[in-house]
Image (tube, rainbow, N blue to C red):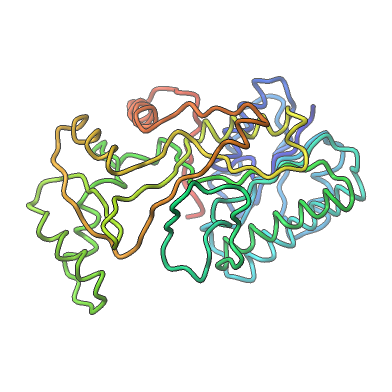
Amino acid sequence: MKILVTGGTGRIGSNLVRKLLEKGHDIRSFVYPGDIHRVNRLDGYERVETVLGDLREYEDVKNAVEGVDAIYHIAAAFGGPFNNRDYLAINGMGTLNLLECIREFNPNIHRLVYACTEAIYWEVTEKWRIFEEPITEEMVAKYHAMPYFLTKWIGEELCMSYHHQYGIPTTVFRFTTVIEPSEFLNEEGMPKQFILSPLYQRYKNYRGDRPLDIVAAHMVRAGWNGEEKFVKKLSPDGRAYKEHYTDIRDIVQGLILGLEKDAAIGEEFTLGGKGLFDYEEIIPYLCRRYYLEAVEVQMPTANYFEFDLSKIRRLLGFEPQHDLASIIDAAEAMQRGEDVGIIPTGVRWN
């Protein structure tokens, strides 16, 4: 098949393109010219056509959609030089442009796969993320925060509405937080989201009056002796953090299944990995692996959740492969310059 991948040079898109090429597909990569550092990153691959364009421009989208057999809509405004209006225009109206071009110029496509986010489960009226039971696909929040969370939810609603109203064969994946291993370690080779020094830099001079930050600052300063440690993060209620992450290789696996499995049509899936980071378990593991001590810090925010992956397992046969150890192994190999089958993210925007 000839497959359009919007955002084809991005963090997820480029790794998806690589896997699709291995499976024998031809690729049209739709790339935002403002992402100047990554526009040409697929130039060395055969069977890849790179098309520059802006999702906000209907003619650009039309040129990308015509003549392809399937579409992955990965591109989105995220972390770039965009304001709230830009987010809505790109993630909302840009998705509408794509759907209208499919309906008008390519109505018989095999599949449209839309990339959404776990953030649609986060209720904007709730300060903390605490879920006593695993999160299922039915637990979408009533209200969503601007700009990214809300506008990605709008894109999902548009895609599924066009599926049911106009028959566009659509599949939605809601990614949990994605880990690309080359970003996982700091320059010293340490998994940066679990170490104390960034928290110390954040709180060493804290003089504010927010009670929960005062507690965190006190615990951070008490735990810091000038040597690196791991942090067992605690929610304000005392429970250790529990969060759900996904290695980019498992994201790609799920996306491929979304194209190949007919059971994916008309369905929304949470796409999560083996990276269930329960700090009760992973901090002792990291201490053993790196021969470091750990300290406890009560954080001003709460994170205690995991996702129920039974639907994607049942319907698509998805089985994630990469836990924390696998992620760190890949990250260390990439720092040594080894090819582990992952295209590194590279410089984003600036």
